Each structure stands twice: as C-alpha cells, then as structure tokens.
Image 1 (cartoon, rainbow, N blue to C red):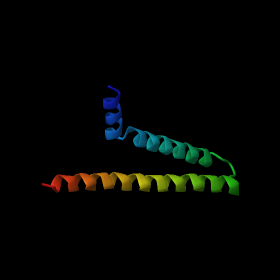
Image 2: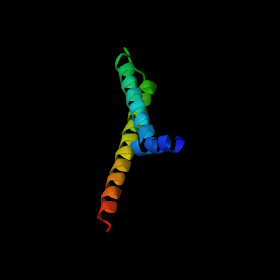
Image 3: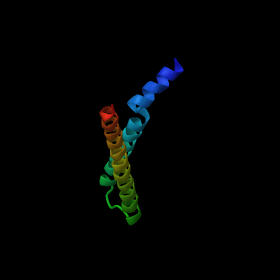
Image 4: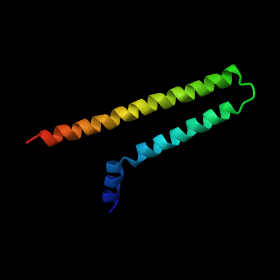
Length: 80
C-alpha cells in the first residue's frame, strides 16, 4: 500500500507542484507588501528584487525539468 501511494506521489509530481504553488503565493504576498509601503527603502527594494529573481529562476528550472520528462517520454515511445 505504501509503495503504491509513493509511486502515485512521484508520478503526479505533487511535491514539486506544491512547492511551486507555495513559492508563487510567497512572491505574490511579497509584491503586495512592497506595493503597500508608503516610502520603500533600498533594502526593501533589494529584498523584493531577490525574491522575484529567485521565483524567476525556480520557475525556469521547473519548466525545464517538465520539458525533459516530456522529451524522455516521447523518446521512450519511439523505441521498438
């Protein structure tokens, strides 16, 4: 039973998808916080810049990983 559950979680990629959802929500809340500041400081601007940059990088890596899985599946389907 545990093996079946683990295989489903791995197959559906629940953990990476959940992590991307949490990171997206975090970056959204960070942007909302920054936009509600009356006069943001340089440190606050730098913080938001780092968060948005990290989100961009994580999203790019995630999408690249999704693409590799699709290419691998197509390649495996072509084998006799």
